[in-house]
Length: 122
Image (cartoon, rainbow, N blue to C red; front, side, top):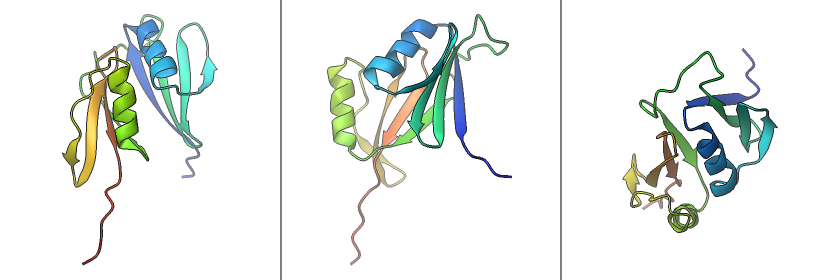
């Protein structure tokens, strides 16, 4: 199996607000869009798409059971940006040995941002 790109699709009842969140708050570049589906680029091989559940065969789970985990280089800067944007991020705390925080998108999908912990050898 040769997987070239991974895409996570989020089905939304609050589609317009959710698209706006990813487009303007997270400032993710758009790879593709039409009147009910927007695909955002996370990096060269990962995508995150938002689909209007009223136009799709799959319905929204209201954010239940989903965590999108995103490894970033500057956790403090991302946390500050989301706080200033009024997104109410959780406090930064260790998760599995690395600093992390969470925030919800308008549909209620949980986004976890984390930064690799620099470990020193003793």
